[in-house]
Image (cartoon, rainbow, N blue to C red; front, side):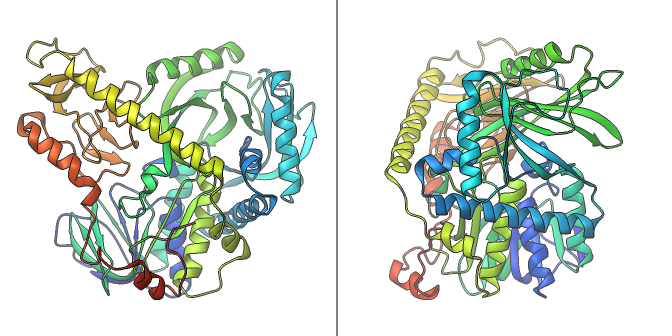
Length: 537
């Protein structure tokens, strides 16, 4: 049993072989790892940062089966059986999460979840969600008034009692402690660079090579290009702001609120870190394609309109991935010879979907019969509307790529451009090479502005002081260090990256994970996994 910050290639006390290696210590990775440890497997979890560093530890803390208009959105394009399976999967995830919180000593509060309309124009969406939820077997109520004396506009809502509210950061610490206490190995400060689906599987990392009988890729967006899941999902970010409540606590909701109409608003109260806070979310946007400072201002203005005395705002954001066919991808990864699993596409509902993914993956790794809902989701058909959404998203990605390069080639030369003021970043160029120049903490830094994944020109995120890719949502800090997304490399420092090197790195992304088994025939892989397609459905 080991917890360590990796000092380099030498990791004393950490075994270099495990039955299962889990990449990523978010909700999917840790829940899967705990389930496998409970079954007696030797498990090593590899994490680039700390457990819950990204969306798993930085969300609203709602583990709810009523998810805005999610069920009705799925139902519009898929049969009722798939919506029912999705709801059952989330229920299984929620129930496991409740038990895990009890084991880990993580505080959980039951609350009523509301999918609400901000005006009468949104009531049709509320009614559609009620119908879809009831068809899926959830006891959702249609209400005109809510139990809370909330100040913001509310024309009506769908309501579901007994949902879970928690502190996501506390949850992730608790799950990490639970995993380590069970005898698991948690290695932080290690970046995974590639996977070879040999026997045993070889996981290449910044700290050397780990081997295992199986690998679970639990990194939000899969860091392997097999299956091209970055092209089957879209990366979105949501803004979150925490406020000190009004002095008398007026209008502080007990329920968990999420609007079904625009602009999207998520509202709840929370006791986090010994402080009572009002949590307001919104500003949903495609990563790298929005003015994040403007979105943040909109949330601040909206909150102060309804809670004028709310104070001490603290803001952050979280990223998730929406599948074009509306339902998460979970299962064996293509060209993984039945030894590589993954999960992605939770559409902002990772606390329940992520655990459901862990349940399904752990069953398959252990050779157990997967749940009925897992078989239904795993054998779903791709509908014509799914292809249409994929085509539209592909066109948008192409347009974003063109806009980025056209804008970069029209940018001023870096030596002639003024130094950005504090908190500001912008694109310049050195010859034909786009560079990103920003000033953060009083220091001006210049990095390559070309994403090493597929060559998109990056966009400055003013609210978070990061460089974000508008193509497939990879993100980097202002110094160029990779944060998240399908990219696995840092940005080159601009002075060390000639244009041909930058472009070569971008072009090579699509083949970076092509390992020794790349030429294995599809028939061979199907035989290795008992004939089951390895599409991760």
